[in-house]
Length: 466
Image 1 (cartoon, rainbow, N blue to C red):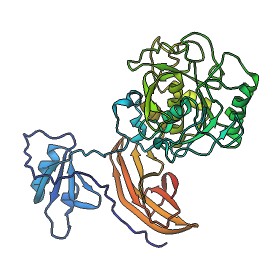
Image 2: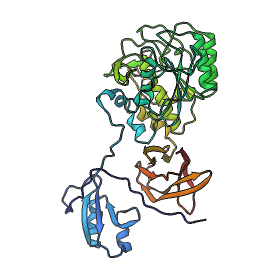
Image 3: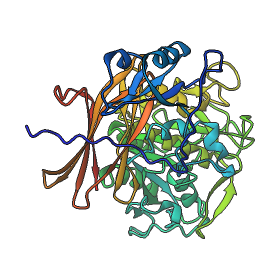
Image 4: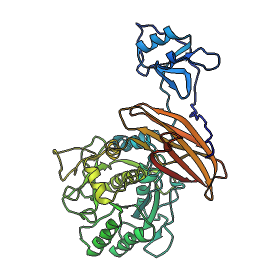
């Protein structure tokens, strides 16, 4: 087999300034992340007595990281030191930084999924609502949908913007929990009302025509419709995750579809985690999510504040998209079981009819999803024109050495290969690997192997259509 080209990839760091050499003594304060030590060498030849102290940075044995005073003093006594610097932390300037209007994402720890490279990638979320406008924050996110009121392809949100707001809660670039998910607008509402027949058609269409993985329903009625129940049973049997708002009147009345046993009913909490006054209190409440004074998308390409369980539900739909993009083969029942153990218990201990099982938490969900996974590799994410990135996470208490490889394919033929070797991750450490894809590549693939000699996969290969 043709020898794979080995390239050491370094992630670009903005605003970097060379550190001044520092002097460390045995009685100085040792930094939490240790020191980087540069060894003086002529041609990169480092004796074994030096290589056993600390660890190298990549293949560069002459640049070592020491994590204790003992290692540092031993290295200073063994080798000629060119300089020593603190192993400082640098911050990646992500596009998904919090703004004040994102308090609800911070409350449910959404960043815990983003740091692992999980943004709901390519998961189809059907939004049965009033349509969705082409808001700039939904650019590249909206897929063709259907207008079930007039049997057309016109899914523009010409009502009060309810569907646009809900869609943005899932996948808006700065205000959505799963910004790489795909939104399928299934328009059934022109004003505040719709008919069961439209909704039933939309549920079947979401599965049969648009292959939705998740269906969000921010509407309800106290009438238990057998036809809607049957449609949702069909959707659940096909593997879709079904999510609905529990109601906006603050009563104990059960609304459907949230009241069906195969639908995840979502109530609302305020910014202080108290129950929102408008959130219903009954057995349809499975979990709660922020829903009061939420900043979302409006129909004029701007933003507005709104409240309601209508906007709590899509946060849970977004969590389902994140779970699916992380590799979970999960349906509505599996998502229910996952949510039960991934919440912050509020109200009475255990389940109660106000908060359900509790407030959804992304960090707890990701921890539960990754149980039993030693090395997790994110989906491939486009981070800039012609550039993609994966995140690799060592989910064990032992260091892991492995090989990360990108390939670009055209019509099944490999046209480019790029490799990072070795990739060395400390326990519970993650790193991002960037690949500058060739312009003629039509399919980008990523592999994580134990080594180039064994080619034993440590995680499933992932694909990205360029």
